Length: 297
Image 1 (cartoon, rainbow, N blue to C red):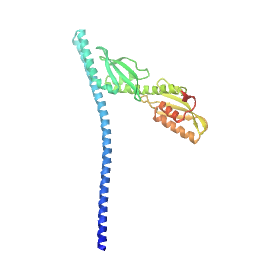
Image 2: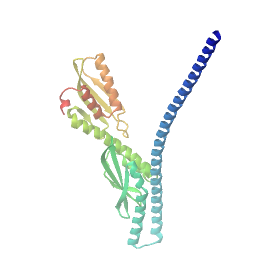
Image 3: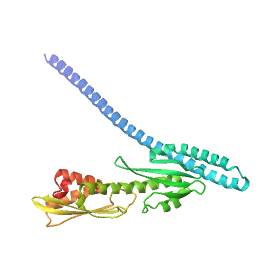
Image 4: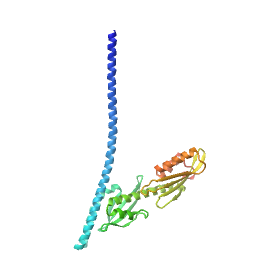
């Protein structure tokens, strides 16, 4: 009897050990599966990042080649003028062909928000910079570049954008960098202006101060904490003109301080630092943090 019990006990223990081993094996398989899924997700993200980098690099290489070709052909034109006197119509056809070739090479750069077309056949090309904010296409800016002198002949870029300084620094040496820097300035400016326009449209009376460059914005709105109404004044400073988000946010309020109003003050300050101003006001309006006439506009 004792031997039977011992045998049974040993058999049960053996079975339990087998189940435990299977359990460990299954757990390891599940863990490996999760790790593989995480690794696969990481690899997919890496592939997406690399694809974006590849497209940007291709665009920059194509534009760089076009810029070098433009400079080489400009030098060749100078030499030809000294030694040759070709028929004007033939010369015009040659220049047009070169411009078309440049246009084809820069076609890929449309993905980066740029475009190029013939402005004056044989004399100039027109670079177009498209601007957008939060997926919404906004203004389009153009500048004509003399293909012989490699200099800007005319443009419709706002006067407070340092296009002349950017051209002097980058245009002859690196056209892709010039376009990229110009695009940063323009997109940041139209992004800031778009936010102000939206605030004026939906919260018109809340804008106290703004400037031409949209580098300073002061807002005012009323809020109620624990039955006490306070007036919040928000100052947004955009010291980095290549960004559409503020570099400094200050929120002050009228009336006596309290834990609830100070907590709300900190919350609003954090929101304005991380989120476009017009979106913050819309969020606060939905939460009931903004009271008074502005909620009706």
